[in-house]
Length: 175
Image (tube, rainbow, N blue to C red; front, side, top):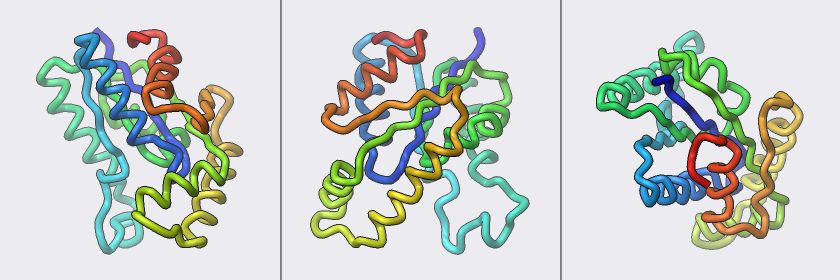
């Protein structure tokens, strides 16, 4: 059975991780075997590995290792979240090593929605520099993502509603 991967990308505060957890719950309820990997953590270090070692793609290396472990246990479905995964989905899929069926989704939300979510996550006031960075990232992701990447607006949706849309988009997961 060929593996399947759903790459979920988007700006900070758009709801990638929350939607992935809601999708996890949906899949568990349907007894669908799967794994969830939070890609932002695969190369989170100081100093940043990509700065000190620009030729080393640590996130891809770590994804390959983790997916090999899941695949060895019989998993064939992966939900992967990372801000820029929609721009790097071909390289990330190649790192999985088993030619997966790929679905890439860019989550989007307006600045007000994103600012509210980021402020809640921060437990208070949101630094304007953080919102400005998130806004720039949103523009870059939307402009640079190919037409094959599905765009989903998350403003006004609950995590469960976003998860249901993600499941429906793949056409292979219950939704």
